[in-house]
Length: 299
Image 1 (cartoon, rainbow, N blue to C red):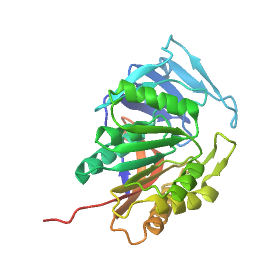
Image 2: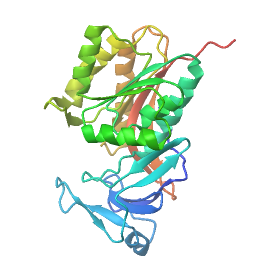
Image 3: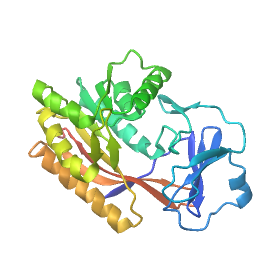
């Protein structure tokens, strides 16, 4: 099991503690809830109070709302390497980017370029499109599927902002399982897959997604549309557990599921967690993952 923590200039986890995290997204500093941070904050209260805004929940289970202390743009641009994208405080408390995922963007770019051949990628639960755009920027042809029309519209704006409008990306608003079942019937195949399912969700036609119940069927369908010479498969799941031991078990379970899906295909599988570390070295676990990649034999 490996732990991956991204490095980039436009984002910083400044501090965390008392159930919150203090983050810098470009020029804006925001405070958001973080149940893992059950320790004392490192920075003084004055520094936290100087944040531009905070997402506040009065009680557990409430939706919450943003409270801004300073004028903040409706949205602003951020960049990491070749990717540019819009950041916007959403009613859910998210901002359109999950900074820990930058580790996956780097890996997707690397394995796509290493393939040195046309790569057809399927990205399911693609959200605002940064994994999709990482693959597209490396030369892949990508099919991006998400059940949220606003998220897909946001992803297309990120494509334009990144200067990737001429790169072949097919944008589809649909439930992931519904789309996969149709692809199986059509006999379509993909050389690589990016799967980033939520714990719970609803499709545009009211379809219910529950991770524990729906993921096995999803992986079964993915196995039927994966080509006989795959380049990579990425399975990422956000974690809500608070203990390292359970995180390791979750990552191992993803590795087992991915191995079952791949069968005898010659891919190397690894598993681990994505995390963010503040300036004091304290770690916030964000997600667990399993990755499978084709590693060419050494000459």
